[in-house]
Length: 64
Image (cartoon, rainbow, N blue to C red; front, side, top):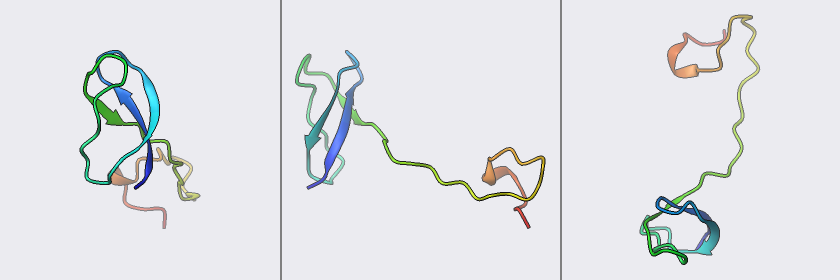
């Protein structure tokens, strides 16, 4: 089971908890509200050769 960072959508509390990887997150420990996973990974972007690169790869024709 992964250790995930969770945030309460009601009170904003953030904490870590070991949960099953099934997308069913526990309720907030403070207020009982719904929680969601906080993404805490890193983003890696290609080194583009175009000087007008916006970094939004989904809207461009590529960096070739």
